[in-house]
Length: 267
Length: 267
Image (cartoon, rainbow over all chains, first blue to last red; front, side, top):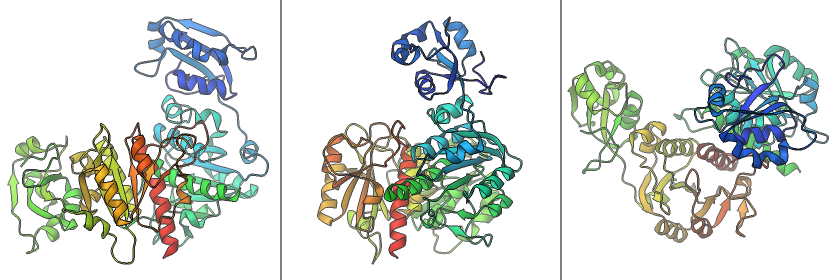
């Protein structure tokens, strides 16, 4: 059982660590291979017992010494509790139907977001404002950090386990699939209105009650020019001149807030 | 000349460091006591010359050795350029009239925001979305970090020098002054709707075209209960259940975005 690195094992399981995340994993409905307590982590057993000890939770609960646990753990001061979890497998159809009946899908596509903390924070923010699913893709030369790395999982506060995520997609294929499925693609743009002749919308000029996939690019460079061009529209948060753009997480918060605002007034 | 610490000297000057911030300081219209170049910082002189060498900029330009500069500098890899700047002195009346004619003031009041990086980021975000002024106050047991500390100045990207700021105010006096001046006070609340019987509004339920002061509290604890009660209303960003709140900077981005959206559609 390797908790470090956050890459799925061959069987597709990822390690999650800490009371809060293990609790989220147990609640998520994802398959659990095992839960591991160290000697001192045993004190958390009571809090988790209602989740762990149910008969349908047919996985072994393992014990280990503190020293062995510290050797496995990714964090510096491990809480002595971990689980091996299988993230839900999501197909493109799952993603499109993730919103449930009577509700249009609202998807976030991370393309080239390299910092795992940013990946996690954006997923958490998107989920908080009602996003129904996510996808991660490589973009140009830059890949997107795995949503299942320890740092991304922590920053997502478990949202990476709750939200349907299509991970490691090819961006051109994904964009084509969205087009066929009638999902409008919006490129979150760091460029100024002057650049490029394409439609550049403020978040409030978008009808967020439609089926939408929002593309979020690399922290520094944004989305590649050709990706922005192949999207249905660019969106840009209008700000006073001379001010640098918001960081990736704050920009995502603003855009998903606008979606939540419009969807809430429609209900 | 002490750049460290960021507390104003007895004469009220603060040190700013780095090409970008010195440039902002020279552009801000604030009084400059001196500009200091180290030997290697001299290479930035050309970029700043149009600003430094104007006849109305009647301050001395000092030279120093790299070693002496490093001893004064607050950053680890100093760029070799610094300035002593007098932040604009702002009265309460300045703050109320900061919006200019035909525009209602939109103020941010930081009460108990302890991290200087958060203070700077919130000021930068507020300025980016059209805030017209700011105030800082102690709140309960926790003070607000100085907007003029090196870390806050850097995080604000110069906004702390451009925006009128009333620093180190008494919160009860400030709230009373707002009431008298007809400025609506909104408490940014981390509490859930169930707590407290006071009006709790989503950002979109507020009329941001009115004169408004938004109170932002401590990163962890928020505003003290009695401050929230004495405000005209509480505002809370609605999010899916089970999700932790946004961090202070992202929450400020969302709220000021809403103000900018409404004010832009009114124009």
